Image (cartoon, rainbow, N blue to C red; front, side):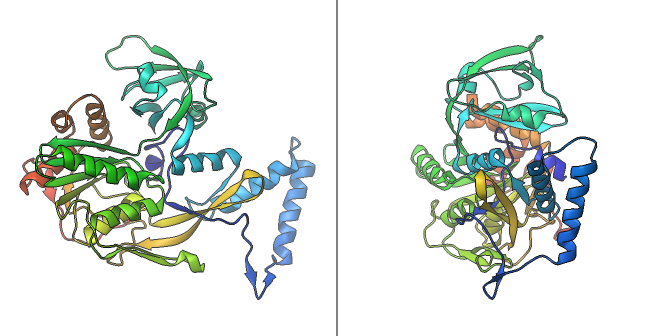
Length: 424
């Protein structure tokens, strides 16, 4: 399951994580004003291994490479989400959170050895060149893309504005591969898409949470309100395959739909790792019905939003049980443009339930092929009306029927039994 999540919803070169940022340039554990020191035996072990590798490894290795490898291994072995970040990796994290970068503007999905286009960002070079949802990228700059080099290949889509990249894809219905020469430019990632599914019912798709997601969500709801006849009767918030992002962004969005109540609490060792977030008065929808659509690719900050709306009785959660990532990572800058992304808190829903390894259980289960449904829905959203989206996306159709009629019509939608969540 962890491998599957990592394959989902990659924004160009890296996954998105529920995280916060430390403003300090370094972190030093101290006690009574004196820095803690490692026990001599542990220090000696590190020095012994380092010296053995330097002297006897089959090939010479630069000391800086050895030290970075040791640091990377130390942090990575803590848990699946902590990570040492070199300069390039740190830049990727910053791109994910700010939403600005230089490239061609593709959201891609890496799964089963294939690099598939989820969407070409509206107005970005990839869309203008003609890349489409569902295209499978088989080569970048004449280098074949496969499971062994996929991450590096995706990074190659980014680059300085004005430079060019050649992309070869296969497309359903086309007998031969298609080639595109695309000039990179500055791109603003879109994390929010919206559409009217029917005259009084809206659709809000949040792909991940960046610093701009809350303001984009607020604007989208306001536009949907104006487009409706007499104001929205209900809205679907689609969090499928949303792997998370900036924690405060998810909290702000939950606050936007709640009049009061706890949104999330967190517990950790450091003083600032223990916190609680609560809602303030004011509901963007003035009490209109909310349905949140999730699947097993919904994680981290997406689970915070879903859990907050569920526990406060503001929304029904439909779809499939979420991933179960209940931890917050703090990005701590280091010297020379490097950083560590360190798990600092465990977070809990308003009811006090831990999401870690359990996820959010939907109030109503809607089965289906989550990836294919989502890709079909995005493709329809790019070119068709809300009605066409409902026709091509069976999970969305089931959620809409629940939103509109208060009951489920399809046989592939069934009430979940009232049982405690089971670990994955």
